[in-house]
Length: 360
Image (tube, rainbow, N blue to C red):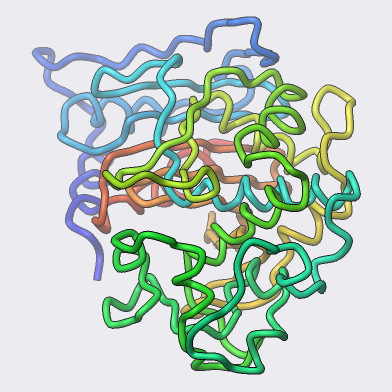
């Protein structure tokens, strides 16, 4: 069933004439902030007709988009903010943080802190071990199982009845111990269910293997090389949260740098930040979750554009936080939003499919 906001938006887009009383969208080339981005005029690379129709409607209608950015051929060509957001505001990435944790694990392997994704998690997670629901299968859980959300625990964020559902775990004192003590309902690797706790364990493994908190590790090995300085880590829970459990807050421009790192096989400005092999492996489909293709904490989402299927390597976060990488077209799209726990947070996929990509 088509979401009403989608239908309304694109019915309005089809209407080319706007009342003279309405505000008109004026495109401006993104400003050069000397932050590592080259900027260019979108109109030199694309037909801007659909773009103008879209933004003319967005400025007239209520919506939950906070930002829309587009990078083409290494140039930032579109940058629009809504609802008083601007380029300097770090945004809560929600689960898009998972995809960045995947990059950090690749760096940890490159640096020799972690040997292999096929290693059991017990090799690196020295602070905790299962104390309840003891099951020999728990010894078989590997880092790869965490990355593909197939550890086998009763952990499914999309099932409110699951013992490991994230909102339940957030109420516990020790998230890591509680997760390790969850009952096993599948063999490791057999079934993938969306489990945020597994991604938090990935961060904790990086931290314990390197001797650095995940924020320190990210700063030294990822953010400083990318010239990313405006970040914080936090959580919506009122409880004291271990660093590995916190989510990342980052500006949309810096989110786009993460996308460029994926597009350029781990390089930024000719410097190899994470190995090309890891970028390829982590963004390749290894499993499916509710029928959708999943790599190592990255989604592969198909979009039908002018009758052609285009695969989008995607970091996704509740509310509409997306990093979309389209290698086939050398394009990166970044969206942030506030449509939390709503299907309206899928609007960026419609914009990408029906407006932005066809413009090229």
